[in-house]
Image 1: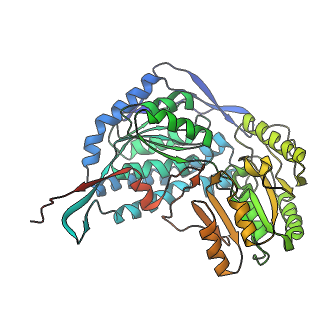
Image 2: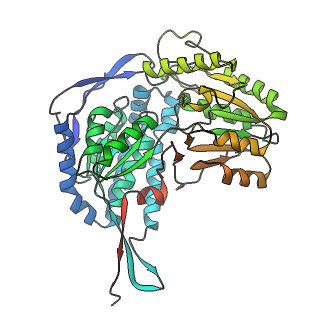
Image 3: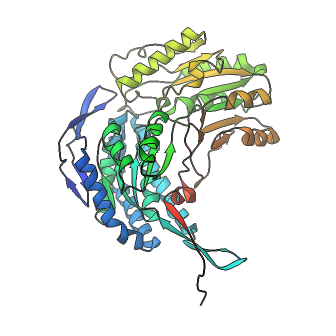
Length: 479
């Protein structure tokens, strides 16, 4: 079992004010791998007070100096990247290969991109030639509360902490109580990089406790949250009384539109993308929309691909999917699979219960439903597990209608060799991101959605600007 750690407040590790233990469960074994304390209001207040006291000096630092501290965090990661991968494996059930090659490397990928992006920011810039004595100044918003999820822990920690630091903000972070070990290790990186005391603080806790306390705190100028839409709504309501800025990155129900002329790898790519991280990704393409003329072939291929996906222990090397994060999530996924069967969808792969040969751990069978209609619960609700719904469409207009008929709007996908059609689809789909023909978004591209997926824009220049205020100045001296 991993040694219990205290909270990181004002540059040191401190014991909680009112210890309340919480076990961290390895979802592959259902056994405790660590014990953490959940914070009380006194812990939250102490962390906010430390961040508030540290803010003036940190905000006054030259942006280049703040960037040097962030580069130091990257240097610490390089020394301990295997530890990070192991922490993620143990806390949220990522197979070790995925943890080592995809989960942990989110930290250097985003951090390096932010170090490039910050150089593009003009901190004091002219309004325009028409107003030679006007300037727009960008300034850090203040103390920020960062609430991060368990499914891609270092992805979200890095997407929030690094731009906040570069912007000149000071931080109180509450990682998910389901997966806090990687964040505690990250706090060690911050400490060992020499980031000044009080600039970054970490308090473990749950949403009703530390999460709500940060959302309501009058000295917290902004909340950045990634998680469920339900929790995002609650945070917004709590934060309203103090009129703080709230940025939300929430759920998704992405459509993957496969036209008849899609490339030969499109179906396999779509199924594997849906099942990656055991389906625990908000941008997963969980609705596969298929042109009617190739529908039967695609259903058969999708079922074959899903049936061939291995499910195995997280300590085992190789490519396979692991468990979902906890018993509650497993039970909810089972209920949604049962709902799909009862709604009349045709089960073509997977189904209820544990995979064959598995008797412990929160493992789910890779599941595919065909003949789904978009009004079914499995097509409208975010399942957050390895469950794919296949829906036929007649033509381009029908595909757009079905894809947009969802409360979510995070990521949609398009597969066609027709460039003009791709462009039309990209503009017609109501989502913050559109990825086509398997091409990933480039470095510095913003991640975020529309509608019930929230409206955060994380990554690149946009990610830093979320933590900045714009100040309009007239009468600027040009002497």
